[in-house]
Length: 306
Image 1: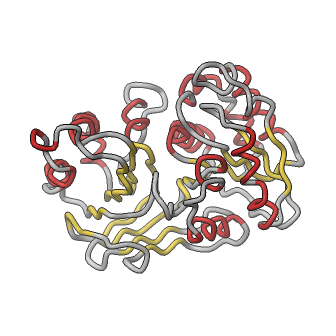
Image 2 (image 1 turned 120 degrees about the vertical axis):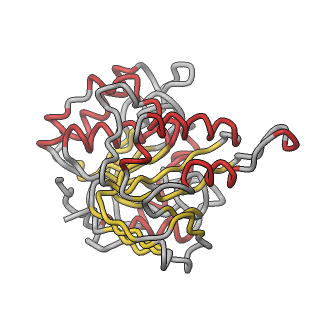
């Protein structure tokens, strides 16, 4: 795996909207944060475009992404937001271009599809972390979320323990492996395609938003049937926000769903990580080795940059 070069103050980062559009005034609220980090920025040409629920056409969004990887002045790429649409042009990604011009790529949610395609197709380490318009620009943006951007400037390990949030062990044990995963819906959407998530001997991170228990059940069952849970070295359960059932008296609890799919696995499983659509949203690199200790309830991940 290729680790991108770390950022330094004064670097230019490219801002892209690979999926849904963002409002100009909202995105611009995040620029002060970038300036505090000592970064300059270029905004992609399609970021403010609106094509229904997409930020311009597929061709325009893809062109923005390619241009940011090609641009020698741009040292890193941050996603403005997620939404929907990254998978629509996945087969047109120039993975050779990305491999030959490795740089920081950062986002989450719908961006999961790009994380998987880029990691598996270009061999580049990417970052699952809070985005500019949908997270940084919001009043709820947590100080700890902001501090996680520090790992882009210095090669440091990510250490997660109960000092950050309460964690619960579903299955004990210790496992090591490459960290992969992201948004559960997007991972399931990859099944059967050339971008199907590879989980064998890897630590699988799962998160989602707005999916009530029966929908999470359906998604996890598809991963189970595809062998993705069984093959994983360990499971890291992130945040499942806004998962309240519409009919609570006729629903399993989300914890019941987790117990059903994870409780009988033979590898460590821990839930409660603040990774996903939550604050704080702890940013982590994908494509580097990690260690999940379900007995001590800790997750350690190697640096994502050189």
